[in-house]
Length: 546
Ligand SMILES: Cc1cc2nc3c(=O)[nH]c(=O)nc-3n(C[C@H](O)[C@H](O)[C@H](O)COP(=O)(O)OP(=O)(O)OC[C@H]3O[C@@H](n4cnc5c(N)ncnc54)[C@H](O)[C@@H]3O)c2cc1C
Image 1 (cartoon, rainbow, N blue to C red):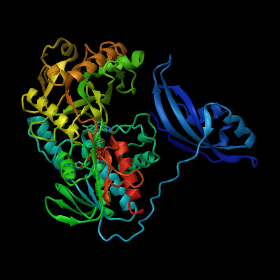
Image 2 (cartoon, rainbow, N blue to C red):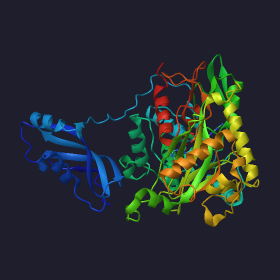
Image 3 (cartoon, rainbow, N blue to C red):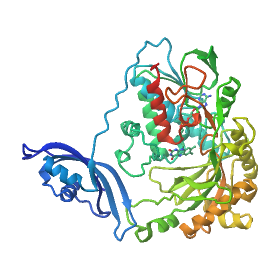
Image 4 (tube, rainbow, N blue to C red):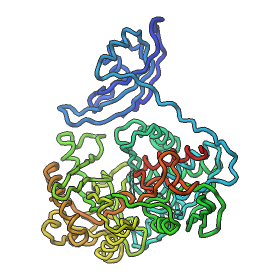
C-alpha cells in the first residue's frame, strides 16, 4: 500500500482574506483495496477546493472490518487556508476540531557543571531513553548493563531455546535492549504523555519503519527491535554516553541519605546520581535495596497462563468474511472478564499474532513464559497471556518482596513440571477443564524450547484457576472455539513488577534518599516498552532541577 503520511502542496491562489489554520479530521475512510489520493478525500470531505489545502498528515490509520465494506479509517491533521467564516462553519462539524501541533521537545541544558557522571543501571527502554535525554541535556552518562551485547546475547538465548542451557546474566530479560528485545515490540500504551511522539520519532531515526508514527497498533517485532537498539546504543556512544556490558551493579552505596557510588562486579564508581532502570526481574537488586532501607512497597500484578491458537482460527474469528484479504495481516484480540465471586479481573495480555511462545527464565530452576514475534508476524500461531489480577493486599505478610516470593514459587513449580529442562508445561485448554494431560509436540505448538505435557491445574493455586476457567468460558462465548482450539502453557508471571520503589511524584527521586531515580518497569510506575521509555525521559528531565 502507498504511504501518504505527509503531502505538501503550494498554496495556489489562496485569497488574502484567508489565513493558515490547522484542523483535525476524524473518520476519513476508503475501501481497504483502493489507494485514492487522501488529499482529494480531505478536500471532498471538507467541501473545500484542493488548492486551499496546504498539507495533510496522517495521525492515525486503522482497519475497520466491522462494516459491510472493509475500510481503512484515518485521523488526519490538515493545514489549510480558510476565512474565519469558513473555519467557523467547518468547526461546527463533529468530525472536525482545532489541531495544535505538539511543540518540538527541546530538553533544557544542565544547570550545574557535573562533578561526576550520572550512572544508569540497565540498558532497557527506560535506561536507554534516560541516557538519550541526559546526552541531549549535555551529560555523559555511564550505563551499566549486567547482560551481554546483542550478538552474544542472541547466541546465549538461542542456546537456551535449543538446548535448555540458561545463562543467568545474558538471556531473554537481561542484556542490551532489556526485556523488550525478544518481544513482539508492540508500542501501544494507555499513557497519554506527549513524549510518546518523541519516542516514536527517535525509534524511526534509529531504523524503525515510519508507519509506527501513525498506524493504530504499531509494532516492531524482535528482528527490528534488535537492529534499532544496536543503532541507538552506537549513536549514544558517539555522543558521549559510556556503556559497560556484562557489568552488574551489586549495590548502590549511600552516605547521609545521598547516593555516593555504585559497586559493580568490576569496580566502585563514584557518582551522586543513579537512574535505576533494572526491570522487574532483577530480584537481587530489590533485595539489596531492601537491605539498605530504601522504601519499597508491595504492588498488584497479574499471573496466569499463555494460550495459543492457530493464527488462521483467530483470523477467521476476527476478520470474518474479510479473512484472507491480501495485506490485511494477522488478526489480534483483547478480551476481559471480571469474576463476580472473587472480584478478580482476568484479561488477555501481550497478544502476539503470528508469534512464538517463549521460555524467558532468569534464574536456574525457575521457568516463566512470554510471547515474541518477528516484524512480519508470519508464524502460523497466535498467542496471548490470560492473566488474573493479584492485589498487593493478597499478600498478608508485610514483606514488600512477598509478591516476588510468590512468583518464584510458581516459576519453580513450572520448571519441575516442565521436566527440569526449561520445557514449557502445556495442556489443551479443553483438557484443562477435564484435568487430563494432553499429547503436545513441536508440530502442535510454537513454543521455544518445546513443551511438556502437564496438568496445569496443579500449577496455579485454586484461587487463580477458578477465575481463569470462568474467563476462558466467557472468552469462548466471544470467540467461538477459543477453548477447543486453544492450548495453554505456563506459567505467566512476569506481567509487571510485584514491587514498587517509592519515589516522589515531583522529582522522580526515591523517598528518603537523594540522587536515586527509580525508573521504568522495575520501579513499579511504568510497564511496557513505550511507557518505560517515557518514564526514563521524564526522570532524566527532572535531573538537576532542584
Ligand atoms: C518476552 C517479552 C515480550 C514483551 N513484549 C512487549 C511488547 O510487545 N510490548 C511492550 O510494550 N512490552 C513488552 N514487554 C515488556 C517490556 O519489554 C518491558 O516493559 C520493558 O522492557 C521494561 O523496560 P525497563 O527499561 O524498565 O526494564 P528492562 O527492559 O527489563 O531492562 C532492565 C535492564 O536492566 C538490566 N539490569 C538488571 N539488574 C541490573 C544490575 N544489577 N546491574 C546492571 N544491569 C542490570 C537488565 O539486564 C535489563 O537489561 C515484553 C517483555 C518480555 C519479557
